[in-house]
Each structure stands twice: as C-alpha cells, then as structure tokens.
Length: 407
Image (cartoon, rainbow, N blue to C red; front, side):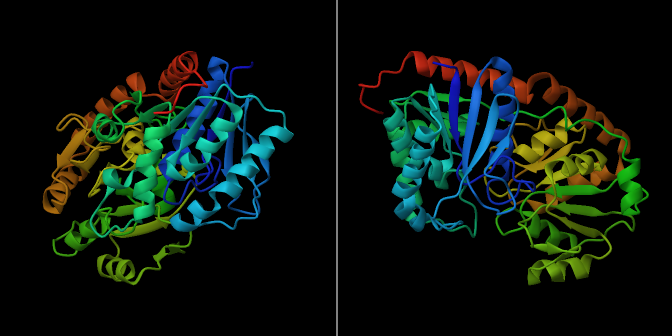
C-alpha cells in the first residue's frame, strides 16, 4: 500500500482564502502539515466540506496532496446539534468518495470534534488506524462570556476514548486528555511556523501604505468577547495615549469590519472614541498578515483563555516581540524579558504598560524581536512539526491491529 494518509478537516478548509472563522489556526496547521508531510514521501488527501461556491471541488495542495470539498446535500454551516444529526449522511458521502476514487489509506487523521464524529465511521470502514487532534476542546478553551453546547462536550470526550492515538499542541492540554482517556496513546506536537512566509521584512512599504511615520502595535485574531482585545480597547480609552501611537487590529469574521469600520456597535463606539489611534483592517489572506506582523513594533495577545497560539508564533518568527497573557498557547512561547513580556490573564493594565514600553523603545523591541526570531526559526518550523507527525503516523500504523478494541 502507498504511504498515503487521509486528513479530515471538515469544518476548516486549509485553502480558505481568508483563513477565517473560528478555526483559523487549525486551517494553517493542516495546510502546513499537508505540504511538509509530502517532503517525507506521504501522499495526503484533505477532505473538507464545501463552504463557498466559488471554490472548486478539488484543489492541489503540493505534488502529492489535494483538498477535496464535499458537496453534500447537508447545508453549511451547521449547529453542533445539527452536525450530530447529519453525521451519518456526511460519513456516507466521504466513504462513497473513497470508493469511487479507489483510494487506499494507511491512516485517518481527524481535526476537531466535528471531523472526529465522521472519522470514527470512516476508519472502521476502511480498516485503518485513527488519530485525532481535538483542537480547542470546551474544557480547554472556555473563556468568560463563551457558551458551548453540552452535546459538543459529550462527543469530545467520547471521541478521545475511541481513537487509536491523540495529538495535542501543549502539555497542559495533554494532562486534561489523559484524565478522560488514560489508556489512549497521547502525543504532543507543537504548531510550526511557515518560514517561507513569516520572516523579517523592511517595514517601509507597509508604513507608507498606512500613512504612518513609525511602527504601530498590532493585534491579530478574533474580535469577539473573551479574546481580551475589547478590554484592551476599553483600557486605552481611560489613559493618555501618545499622539503618534497606532494599534492595528487584524482579523475578525468575514463582514465584521467593512471599509475599516467595525460593524459591532460596541467596537464602533470604541473606534470612534479612540480615533486616530485604531485601524481596523479586518480579515485578510494569511500571506498579507505576514507583512503587518513584520511591520509592527510589538504584537499584543491579550487572550483570556487557552489558544492554539499561531499568531504568537508567527509574530515571533517575523522578528516581532509579543506581549501576551499567561495562558497556554501564549505563555509557552514567550520568555518574559527575552522575546516579549507576559501579564496575568485579564490584567490589562500590566499588559498595556509592557506594550507601551516596547513601542517607546525601538532598540529593546529589536533585541527582543531577534531573540524570538532565532528561537522560532531554529526549533519550531513547520517542517519540524511534520517530521514529528510522520514519525507518529509510522508508529501508530505499525502498532495497529484492526481486530483490537478501540480505546
């Protein structure tokens, strides 16, 4: 059999042009892993659900990889409850595609619990081992103001008990998984950086395009409650700001920012109160984000709960220091006083003080940026991540027995 694996990333298309939605980090990890696994001789098919009519049914993703978008009769997106109801139909569509295209796989790797529901059926049908990456489990990422369905919680835990192996990005998450599924092999593989896209750059072109005379601060991520950015903006409204200080806000869901104006009433009021210190740039392609990362004097990551941490890794890999909260996915990457600063989660005053320190001291920001760049580019590249994944794939395949009971 060929050295071919099936990735199920049904809720996050790795070639989504805006890398947006709730699972932007997952899309990036799946895409980078797919590309780099091919360098080790793996053929990789990624099956996702069709989210946009303008995207083709099939797209190449490297010489040995492709993305297949299932045009199921099930409308997208679905609520958690509706996804559970539709799981049989979606699984049948995936299995039928595998049969029609005469595909054989050594292994199935599912991403996020929605894909895990389908992967259980698919792996059993093709008699292949099943690895699951849970990403942002409810009990892991719960933040203030967030609400999650109980059906998601139940299925997330049951999936972990059924798989042949689990892969998580951080040790603290591994501890939680082990409590729920103590007998399932568990691996920790940290996200990796796409060094072909994130690196140090001349900030001049972006500064000129923005009409700025000096490097801004930047935030990259979602704009909803629980991310910490609204608390930062509210704090900025209460303190005196230097005349030439600008904070760029990059991200949000599609349509959340229109022509530089946030559509949410609270954010719109903050934008008005803090003009001209804020620039809402909205969602943009991943490659465009890289230019702004390298232009910023520092990136702030005020998350109130755990995160996958891609924005932190990408900022550091761009030679930009990060000021972040002491939560998993951020604190794992920041060495306080070396490549950035840490503040207790929710301590906006301390976080903003550190951010202003870096903004007002370009030499310190440069030194910390170099330190972050060296750490990430030496040890945390996406090709390193893929090597670890390939080793895990081989180990799980070698130890797999289709007649053994799951979990």
